Image 1: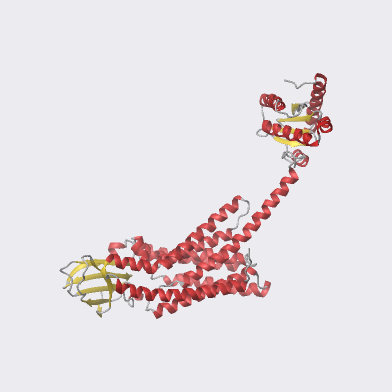
Image 2: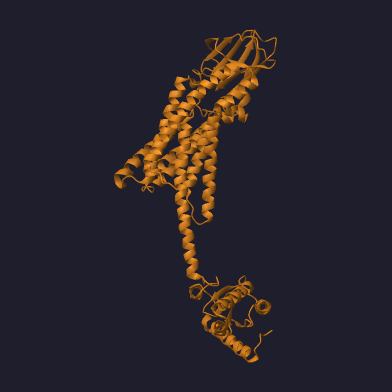
Length: 546
């Protein structure tokens, strides 16, 4: 795979962000043209007046007076988006539609961000409308909604198309975050966990949800105006902590106490905002300053620690890549700001979320690549460990594993059964039929030993033709039955042998006895003695015991 340099990453971000700026701006122009061709129009002829009203939260109401033209469609609607504003629609001084905070929000002062959809009857068309907007917050006073008039489905379809690129990027961010978390869980099963990738995944999910919930169409798609009003504040706050931890782990000074400041600040601000909301003292929108403070503290700490990192340790690949990606995000946010003012808040803002998506993908892919390398190293280490403790020919534990096991400090011979095995006439098989048949003799017997005893003990090849099985806390009768079953398997295997020489295995097995054995070595010698006695008997009888 081609390795990209840091300059390539930076050039990639600049080119694609610029292309997205061009696409976003032209996309907005196409949407304006589409609005004129579809069965609806954007109302631009209306009168706006500010009406003082001491009973309202901000002491003012904004009244829009308009007289829509006759609508050709039988399903004619007036559609507009209100942001933390109570809305009342009157026709000839008669209230025909209202949307208040008390109806939608049981624990706050705002109705949220709402798509107001009002159907006009044929008798209503051509009459004078009055739309009163009552701002809940000072920031809502200067919000001028776009009034859509005509076929409801054309309006909704056009708005969905307009927000689709931003929605798609948000979904990509969320999916990438879920994938990173899933990949980390998969890697942890392989023995290599990277919590930093989990932090990046959580950050990606929060950023995606933040952008998604901040879009105009989210409140329409979700059907819950309060969730669409509060979710951007929650997700933005929740994104700060995992991002801070992610950035922290990229630095050599990750153990420095200063990294705890943003997390503590974020948690305190979140608890304070929730407390003020529950006590009906202030809505989340009114405590937005606390969110900005927590973000500012995080940015300040990151900048200070970055400068400290560069001065102390110099530029690393992770730090350089992170700085370039952050600059790409900043460029995207600046472009979004330009589009916002150039289109009078009607443009599609894509560059910021696009920068974040690129940021998430670049750093996520580099983290995944490092994890894959660790997994590969771990797999090689496991292979080396297996080679160190397993016999290459038979796959059983080798003499090294056997010695380490019985010499462990916590090893106890109590209730231990030792079974020793020896292959008869292996040298004769090698001399008469070749070493290939001798190897088959060894591997076949090793497999039969494993099949018979591996589930109740550890099987070892301790010599060329010598095997041992150590069984702990196994009933004597079970062991005895397994030995008999093993001999039956030997007889069955001999019937399928392509050569005339049968396999013959001598076995001796005994249980550790405190009265007879000083340690496990004494038990092994007794089993060995019994095995050699059996081996001699088999040679004398020239047949397998039953």
